[in-house]
Length: 358
Figure 1: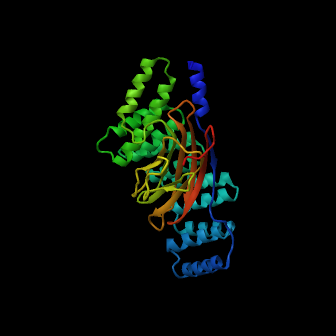
Figure 2: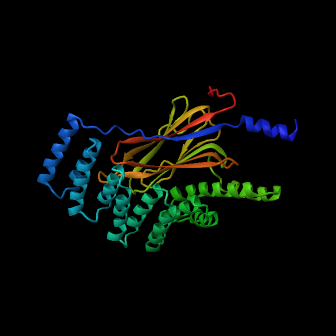
Figure 3: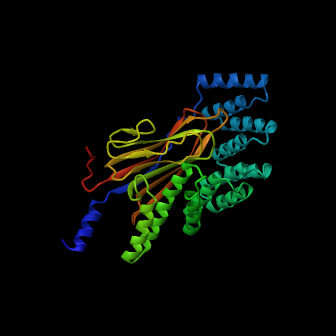
């Protein structure tokens, strides 16, 4: 077979991927049970007006009931007695966003850094919001302020490198990831994901080369990273979150309905979960070297954490990882309470014969 025919055959055999955002949260509607809970929480606040747990629960109960204006009023009443609490400030911003008032929401989010200008966590919180809005330059600026306040924080360095990578600043990103990967004092939960990101950057450099020798050089750098799951895959999913001391889980359900997660790490089609992080930030990752035809569902589950802490972060889905057609898709999520889960995206895989693997 001629080289041209060989290439054509490979292209025909390659799967096609369609990544679709999904938001399968419970419907917001008033029910007798929710109204009873709202009344109970209002009474609890009357008895203990400074108890954060009551105020947070009331605000979320009103949101669940679809009463967003009342939820905004409740959140603002909470903030009036708890102005420096990051949770309530971000909650007000979220409600304003849901009400279709994005500029007010952004001003509210920004107030976090005005109130706590010397707090790196406040800077990180605003950076996370800006990332979710796609404002990567602003997120990068906030993270640079945060790391200036706490230069030894390897997690902040990772996040800054991640934003630089998403902005296409590959040399800057690689330098930070290489520093983390080579730092024996950095936690393994950061060093390995840094190597994963380096694999993506090195693969991009390899694709840009025009000579076999140059491509071989970058391949050697990728091999030296010793990545579990390799650097060329049909599907790679990363989960990260911005809250410490929390356990957030990645669930991926394959076309046969088999869920791959921390208790069942390897699926029948070869998809595998890596890095179950139980103490905060992530990332966790899922790799499918050869995806089966059909639909992969990607979900996030808030397994455990403080009653006053939300789980919020992002899922990055990479299809055709390490190859010419590599594409990245990022989906933010917010889970207010432990035990909640949300489906953030579905990946439709079409093969040449469009038949599911047996």
